Length: 333
Ligand code: LMR
Image 1: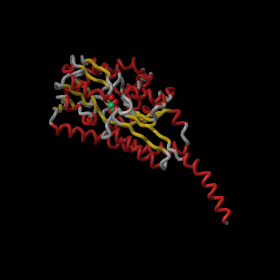
Image 2: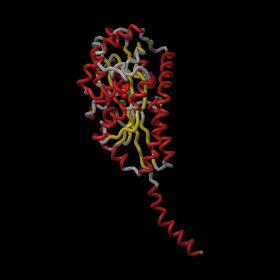
Image 3: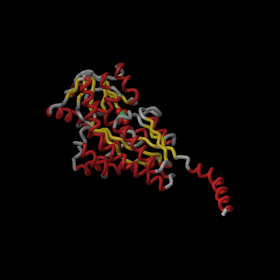
Image 4: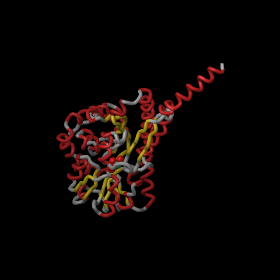
């Protein structure tokens, strides 16, 4: 009896270091460019909470918000190199990877409402687009919503002609580049973390983004007029380094997939309200004037931007446009 206790103690001593080693957590660095207090920021924190819970501490998720680790373009390079494991960039930022098809999602007035957008991403469109990342060493896990863009400047933007000659910051999509050009303005790609200062100093005159980003980045403090146009949609692809993801123990990967599925439902369920609340707060601040398009004004913007669709065929290719048209039962022309 005493001998077996002794044997157990010795075995415990020998096994203890390797058991401690086995418990060294797998670290997932999750980098993103927005504030914690946004749909994406909250989604990342929700994923952290659930991932750590479901893996019972085997995985530790480090969330780096507000471009604290990498800026827009750098973060995708870092993911490919394995310096970070998880990102949620807006789909407008995939072109430097040589994947242009995601830009089709930036077409103006493509999704008539939140439900139509959700339907497209849950269905064929979302799946088809994720396949395009496979050869890039990137695996797509989920799509996170952030609603529709507003647009702003230091003058009211009500008619297409109001855009003429103004410089607008865009996040990377050539489709956005095109619709701003069609309106006679000068689009300029710039990292998200640099926008506030660029607006403040007049490097650019205006920008487009969702209400939650206008609020948390304080863009509304340096833009006199914001048009609540909802002319295009902002969505994120949650992506991981494929080698890292494929190398995880299958049970851990399963637990992380469950955490991601739940974090996705959570993020997509709060996006609308987060943006509505942000808009109400911007309004309450009195620091900017909100403008809403009349039906006629909206029709004029839509007509002016319509040539973007024809141009897009040459940029993103007809295939992705067909997939979208079929899923949404719309004509693309
Ligand atoms: C932007 O650059 O405007 C957006 O992609 C920021 C974001 O991630 O919401």
